[in-house]
Length: 231
Image (tube, rainbow, N blue to C red):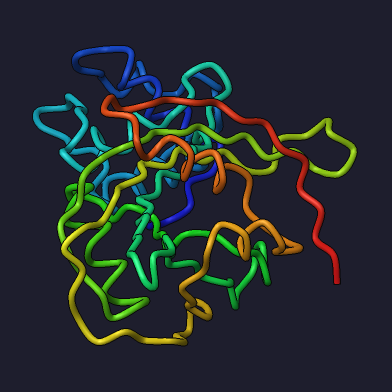
């Protein structure tokens, strides 16, 4: 999508704050006419607004964008990331094993955690977690929501939030498929809890999630962590 500047966002804000707007309502900055018309025409051409009998209104595309606009700062608000997490477990030789993935991409290169993926627009959580799981590990199964966690990630100084994640964690049962040991996303391995605890770079919340699997109710937890990438 076209990156809008402050002038264009101010014009959109003028329409957001009215059911309908006239030309005279839109130039809240008192820009020179030629400059203002340039930004107005761009919004019309890109399909964010439309004009009918000298009245300007948001299009469907404009209404979708409007929900992300900070009407006080005249900027696009940064949104937190939402991900679906697959917790797969199985029994082997009387030991409980969990399917873990060591990341092969930034950020968090080399960190170990459950297979996961960002939610795609318009997808359901259950279908998305199974799609991601199959894409990254070759496995699929039945998904049951068990946990929701909100994780704020701060930089080393602990002053700036650099990431904001909400994770919907699903227990995957009735596993089937052809196991993929390695993909572009990472290296997959079945591990015991003892092996998981020995991992140098382990995502926060992994052991917590394993401990809560036996609970019947869906749990919720908020975590703040300091991120340090070691070479």
